[in-house]
Image 1 (cartoon, helix red, strand yellow):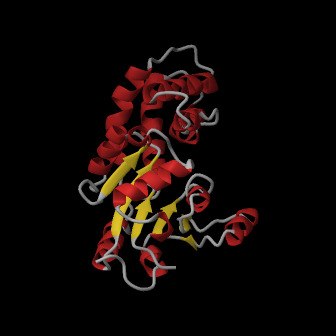
Image 2 (cartoon, rainbow, N blue to C red):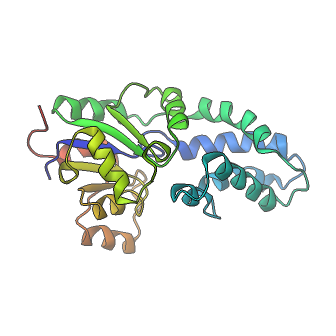
Length: 243
């Protein structure tokens, strides 16, 4: 596998979004829903991240704007908690955002991997389904601002992953051909399979190493390697990048 550029997903690929959401969500939930089940309050951040009603997917498809998507996810959490206390989204996020950004950390392999890719002459960018402003904030909070050549988001592109147009436009902005641009992300269907469907080489990032047998068969059938960290990404490309 040779490639001239690399596009990376952001959440749970570059920084540990799930852990930060878990910590911040639990902290804020105990303050906003004090009479709800304590066992459930501990998992409010996880519930928000997992989004069981699929509001983030609706945003990705262009059916909701970013703020409406987040409002509906907070409403769902209130129903899940069975609480009679009405929490306005603005109040939730006023408490949640500082806690989330304080908890957000980049994975240790990001900086050295980007440096190694750049040293080999490869362009490195981000393609995320999050919004541009929120991605910039998360990059700054995790110490990754200014690291990447391009940052492409759902709202700046006009469409999100796994739409092939998102991958193709991100490659155009990176200055590389899709067939020579490796895409790496943690969500099987949105990231590696989406990129594969757009004619790009791809790798599936599974940091905990747990891959269900059915999923392993899927990626094997598509020729998609599974990596447990970004350090393995630079090793996937034999030969030179662009110079």
